[in-house]
Amino acid sequence: MSDAAIPAWLDTAAYPFAHKFIQLSAGRVHYVDEGTGPVMLLVHGTPTWSFEYRHLIREFSSRFRVVAPDHLGFGLSQRPAAFPYTPEAHANVLEEFVTSLDLTNICLVVHDFGGPIGLPLALRRPSRVTRLVVLNSWMWPFDDDPGMMKKARLVDGALGRWLYRHANFSLRVIMPSAYANRKTLTPAIHRQYLEVFREKTARVLVLHALARALTGSSRFYAGLRERTAFLRDIPVLIVWGLKDSAFPPRYLDTWTDLLRSASVVRLPTAGHWPHEEEPDAVIHAIYRWLGLR
Image (cartoon, rainbow, N blue to C red; front, side):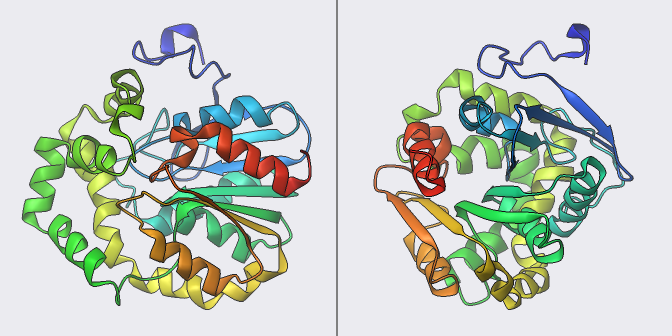
């Protein structure tokens, strides 16, 4: 990527990594590929991009080959108009990405929608994924969760579409509210996410599509939960920000019921983005789990 092609808004001091691109069947994907050694694959959620993993990329690239793609429509990746932007579609693109780069011996790190997008890789290609780190994410339908269903129905309708399109609801309301301390999301950091979705049509095409998928992809999530047993054969670390207003601690309880042998680190003062809010604590937890500290 030439200097001229780098967006003027990109904070290259906070995100100083080389830009790489790969052309896949659905579109061109931007990714970071730093360091050498075993692969650490970082899968982001919504409404963010690989920028959210900058602290982990910088730290772990001294010991790992850290690969962090931007989903189609997010970050610096292409935004094809015909792509459906469902978690199922993103999961297929991620699998093609991993296969194209021939990534193996992967420590898979997932956050938020990165769970249902990234976990199919571990379920479909178990020989490629050897470890799993979960950061405030999920892999089950919300049918029996009245609170989440109420929120999902709000964003799924015409009002939700209007809020996403005109108020940038996902980035300006939901994202800040899920931080334990909103001051952690500084204007400078927030800008790195807001600039990606300056266009109103993109907010509907990409972000609202995933919001609607909270209920619209229930069958897909149920299929993931049904295959949980496949994850019990690999080491799993769950790092959870307990002050997450989007994914409260009961979601962590669901994880521990599903994966009873998982290692768990609870961060009492972190919210939905523990790796943004308390990166040192997350890095330490991963190092300790890996036996490297």
